[in-house]
Image 1 (cartoon, rainbow, N blue to C red):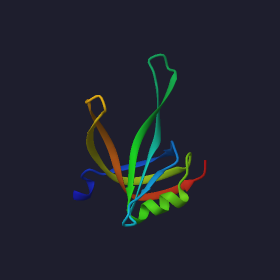
Image 2: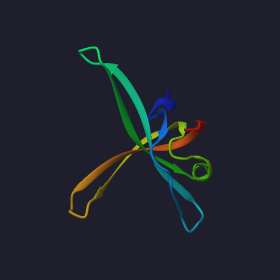
Image 3: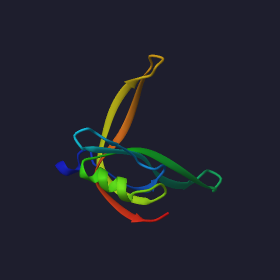
Image 4: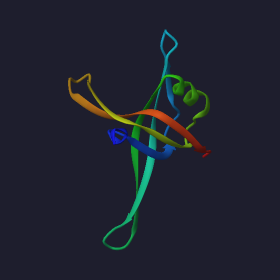
Length: 111
């Protein structure tokens, strides 16, 4: 059961080209967003579609794979865990962001 703790699995499409940062020691980190969609029928019986956006972070050797092969619009499957962080804006407001730290990635197809 411990493997179920803080585990996220998603299939979706990249909303942007991955932003890859290379550090002086050669380590890389890739950041990008993933869109998943859902649909339901409202009270009137009309189909309503909605997209959900998820912020993804990929570190280590997998970041190089993202840099070389993963592109905007591509469908991927990921597995990872939720993380939270905060930062202060220039105006002094505290902002919170939830991200998924990816540890497995599977490329499913093209656009």
